[in-house]
Image (cartoon, rainbow, N blue to C red; front, side):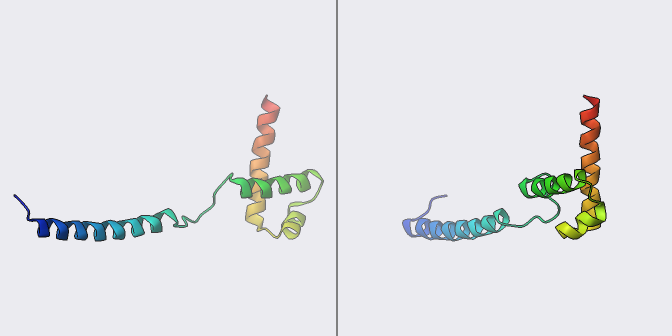
Length: 92
């Protein structure tokens, strides 16, 4: 099938428009917030380390919850992680 010059230019214009639309869609997906917990990223580790220092300092879970303004569930999640790390250290 052969195209005329005008048809080729028209097709190029259509493809450029489609490409622009797809690039916009791609940008949306790149910037999308996937939500949920991002365990062990820098923010999580900073909050965990703060918890560990206070917990080792003798504060109770409820005192840490109040001081750090975190949920009880998050505090217990940190404690579980803390206990796992301590168990691994004792095993070595």
